[in-house]
Image (tube, each protein chain N blue to C red):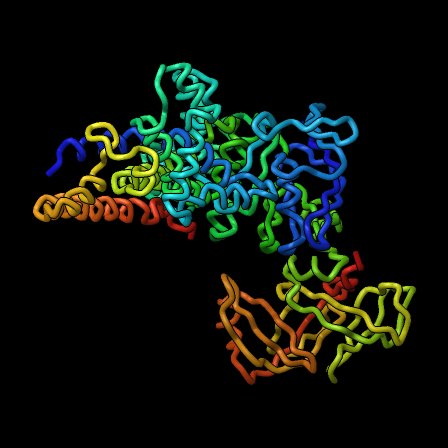
Length: 224
Length: 365
C-alpha cells in the first residue's frame, strides 16, 4: 500500500473538514434561517458540486488560481511560487467540492430546531450569537458533526478534481484514489486491492457513523 | 404596573388583529376560539411579531410605537412568555433552564434568584433533572419559573396549562397569584377552555376574529353573554332558536316558543317584537330537575318532559330531557342516583326566567 498517499489524503481531508466546519456553519445558519426571497439561488450554488462533473469544477479552479488570475498572481507575489499543482490548491478545490456535503446536513439540523426554543431564548434576553451557541448548536450538534465527517470522507475519496488541480506529484498532490488508479495502470492489482478495500471499509464506517448521528437526536415527549 | 396596547396587525390571508386594551396588575384571561387572534396578540406584545401600527407600553416604558419609530428588540423587552408547548430547552437541566435568562448575574445571585422562584413554584427538588424526565405539570411549573426568574414587567401565557386537568391548573394559578402579590405585574393568560378556567382570572377579555368583543370581570362577562360564540365558550350547553309569542314590557319579560312543539318559556324581554325569532342560551347547570310536578315555586317555567339519556360529563352527570326541544341538564351524580334518573323517566324542568339569556349571533367583522 502507498502509505505516503494515504497519509496525504488523511491530512488533506482533515484540513478540509476543519475549514468546512468554520465556513459551513455560517452558510448553513444563513440557509436555515434567512427569509430572503432569492435564497434558493444560494442553495443551488452551494449544491452545484453535487451534480457538476469534477473535471468541470477542477477546470474552473485551475483557471481561477492560474498565474494569469488575480488570485494566482497575489499568491505568487506572497509566496514566491504558483498555486496550481500544490497542496494548498488541493485544499482550496476540495473545500469547494465538498461544500454541499458539509452545509446540507448542518442546515437541515438547524432547521429542525423547534423555532419556539429560539424565540424563548431571545425572550430570555439572549443575543443571536448566544442563542446560536447555547441552543441551536447543542441541539443540532449531531448534524454539524455529520457535516464535518461527510466532508472529510468525501475529500478522502476525491479523484477528478485532484487530478485537474493537483496533478499527480508523490507526497504533494498524489492522493489515495490517484494511487489506486496508478496501481491499476501499472497492473499492480495486489496493491490496488488492498488500498481499495481500505477505502471501502473506511467509507462504510464513516457513513454508519453519519446515519447513527443523524437519527432524530432529541426526542422531547409531548406534554400530556 | 399597567400594560397599554393599541395595535393592529394584518397577517397573510384575510385575518387582521385590531385591539385597544389596558391591562392592570393581576391575571387577565384572554378568551376566544382558535383563530380569534389570541396568540397573534401575545406575539405582538412580546415583539416576536411587528404590529403594522399602534403603540405598546408597560408602566410608562414604551416598547413599540409605530409613529415614533420605537421598536424595542425582543431580548430587551423584559417580558416573560410561556409558550403553548413550553419551549423548555431539552438539552439543559431545569436549573440551567432557569439560569438561562440570568446570564448578566454572577453565580451567587443566580443561585439565590433560582432558589427563591423554584421554592415558590415547588420545583426545588427537580432542578437537577432534564425536562423529559419530569411530569407534564412539573414542566409547566418549570416553564413558568423560567420566565418569572428574570423579573419580567409583563407575563404572557399562551395556553400553557390547557393540557392539564382543572385542579392542577388552579393550583399552578394559585402559586402564580401568590408570587405576583408582591410584584404586581400584568399577566395575560390566553385560553380557549371553559368557564371554570375564566374564573381563575380577575378580568376577562374576549377576543373574536381579531377584535375585542367584550371585557370585564368573569362574572360580568360570563353570566350575561351577549354573543353566541361567547355563550358557547362560556358553557351554555342549551342554545336554541325560539319564536316570540308575546312581550310584556311592564314585567320586562316575553313568552317564547322553542322550535319544536314543546311548551312556551318565559324569558327576559330582549327588545324583540312578537313574531320575531330569538336565540336563547341556558346553562345546563341552571336547570333544576324534579321527579314530581313542583307547585308553589317562584320559578316561572315548569316544563314536563322525559329523560332521553344519562351520561357522565366530568364531575357532573349530563341528562338529556325531551320537552319538545331536547334540553341538556347537569346534576350531581348523587342527585341522579337519589332521583333514580334513567331513560324514559318523566320529569319536570324548572327554569328561572333570568337563567335564560337572549344572545346575538356574531356581528360581521
